[in-house]
Image (tube, rainbow, N blue to C red; front, top):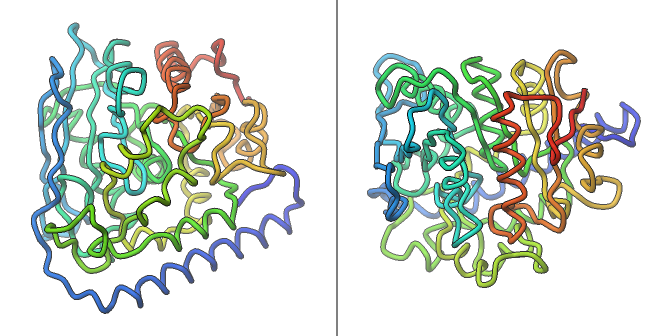
Length: 371
């Protein structure tokens, strides 16, 4: 991982320590889950964005690899179009244990989808493979690499007429969804812009390790009673999410209950992702990138790892990308990891929408350029 305060040797040591911590936790979880031999059921149902003019359920058949004869799975998706014709579509990729509903939020002011459509862009929301209404392949096959392959198929479908004929595709991710957006862009070079929210290279190791160890078999969780999640599928323990995802001072009232009710699953395969993988992805990205971070994000921001200003984010991230890649950053005050669940969310929506409509211009009133 990168650090803006430590020498290179210290950064390498921290990356190595983080990698081994995360892999160790993943392996431990795999052994714990070995006792849960469960049949793979139909995916847990999730409703479409309710009552939205211009929105329709539009699923896609995908494979996890490009190999001939690879198994086909259903990826649940919803395409929302603005009233006027547009050539731009935002592909919204939710984070770990979130479905597409992260992008619609629990109420007024937390609906990123509505903000993007009002701004004139089409939006395609997905339940990542293995989550929500999408199919659940074997857990060890759902990894950052295979999810990037799935996302590439979505991008292609948004361009070739399967889902639309858009000429500008914007990848928008939250947290682990930002990892997938980077992995896809680095591997396939077929998106035009990236918006990465809730993700930096330099994590808070202790807090991230605590979060991972708070994952447990989804089959044991009351939320999934009667759905029988497959072996290797995990979720967050009841009551654990607010400490990682929310700033109590600005979180929407009652959102902790909504967040628990709408949570979904993660896989042991996703936990094999390492910080070195993330760095390899970012160093291959050439399109403009906007980082959006809450200043009180518990997983990435703290003592020695500031997120107070856009300059802090630029300082922490600039060395992770090619020098020719245009980087910009926005910080949302008094906001936790899951930005869209806070009363401050409209600030993030405005920053993203304005920056995108200015076609990656160097700066806006809420965004600062890193180069």
